[in-house]
Image (cartoon, rainbow, N blue to C red):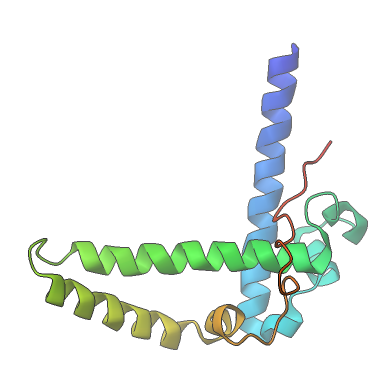
Length: 138
């Protein structure tokens, strides 16, 4: 096995673990709200030891930041999908579709909305760059 095959396998396994961790984090967020998203709960859910998860996320703040980014990506895709279904020369219809989609998404994803909008969680201090979403695993 050469170095590129090892790197590819390692990267594939890393991506799979990150996907599982974010899926678990989203499920915990949906079921228990932001307080239910902990390193221990996610690690247990995906079947690894909690210290192993710290190789991928900068603690709970890093996990929440990655979850936040995941939720933002989903929300933006949902809203954009509604926008592009409208006539390209009708900005009023596009705006209406975006607002309606945003409202429907927020109603359907109340805990995700809480994570995005409440300001209750401090992912980084004011003036501080957000924690890295994911650490580089060795």
